[in-house]
Length: 183
Image 1 (cartoon, rainbow, N blue to C red):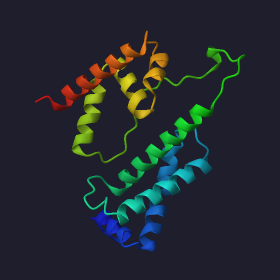
Image 2 (cartoon, one colour; image 1 turned 30 degrees about the horizontal axis):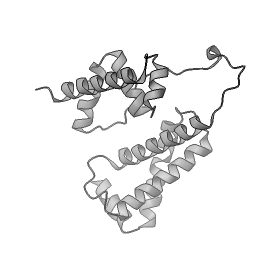
Image 3 (cartoon, rainbow, N blue to C red; image 1 turned 45 degrees about the horizontal axis):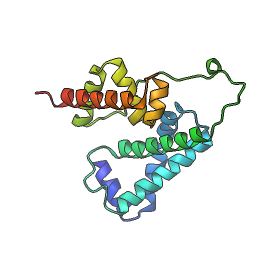
């Protein structure tokens, strides 16, 4: 109920409502975003951009039929912006010729941290995802959660070629859909 009032106030460009949203969720967002390899200044920049996007969406009427909590929606915007920033940073990294593969830290934790207060559909997706095998969790996490390309997934998971990775991803998506929509 409070969220609907806030959305209406944001829609009317109420600066106090915007300030309230900004201050209420700032600390939680910073805590959430610290699990990513970003400095606090970058996290705050991303948070401010997410607030602006949230405000613009409210003004444009895109939040009139919001199915999640405002906080969940804001964090989703922020998470997308974090991934976009990390992907940009990743493309800027270069590896010295002297660097060995063993000296590079490769994160192979394929778990997904989900925001509280999930909708019924999100809960079904979460439960179905947990039921998948490790290979499917890995490939779907890399592709959808971490934004890897098929070529990057092929290298990360040591597939023989990208066609194998593509077909594995397709099979995993089919398995996930079957688990979600099973009677």
